[in-house]
Length: 391
Image (tube, rainbow, N blue to C red; front, side, top):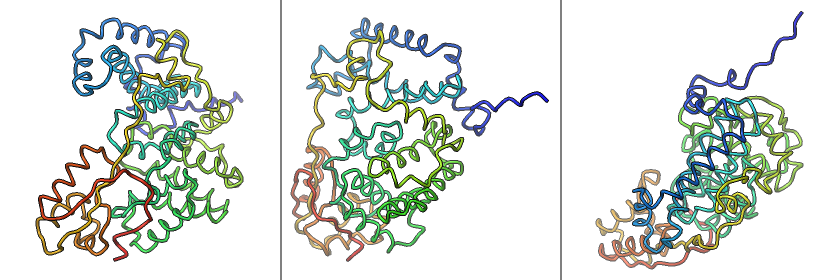
């Protein structure tokens, strides 16, 4: 009997996953080197003609203090970042070659270099994706000094991302406090994904490798059932890989009972590729423009700005009977998970807006003052863990 041919990776995907990768089928006949040659040629053309392009003018208007002589290079990096996020995963499927995932890793290196241009706090949602492509050190740098321990929690998602930040910062006591608080909530306050991550961290703190394995398997299965997700999660459960590498960085023995040889949507080939190709130097530079080669080799150009400091707004004084002030606090927090924003007034002074730009923090503080309260703007730092739901 003839040997049965193994299924292609694409045949294992859901209909939504197949539709996603088919959007990028035009380049599927090109080898990785051909794809990159075309990409670098287009990038160089962007640099040569960027002075006439309206998008560079828009960038210049949006970042008036950015050096004008580098605005076209900035625009090109933005273009490549968007391109690589989608096409890295799609080509992995269309070419049935896991080496194509180096393109997705390039996306995250570009993203890291461009992080100063993102709204404050957006990188927290990317921590697990950075870990998922093996860029754990970048994830640590994004988490460093962030609010793993200074959050007045009103939302389940805030608790999960603060716990993730604290795990990367090795603030294990903070993780325990967050999990204890989560256990006092109703279970339906959390999505299955959020609850899974918190329980996984608890298992890691308990040194329970069997529970870690069960919860990682559960997270992979949740990807199948998740109705709304990034397109690439139709192909690979990247945040499950992120959780794996986050825990492996803490202690590899925590993963001793997890079987990384399972198929879609875990993608055992991708896991093996990450093991064999640690995130050191990128192989994609080649004939890329100089600035791209620098970024892919983890050398952020000196003309790129450093991330600006973040600021919190502290409500120092306020009358709980002042309806206008209560309304401002409600809007700061989006208090629908607290049910009663007046609880905030029981623990003054307290932070009512977290990790934002100085300009926006000053604007929020001005609204509080105009409504009859007293507020201060302070640079974000590790203040003690607290929860409005304690009061």
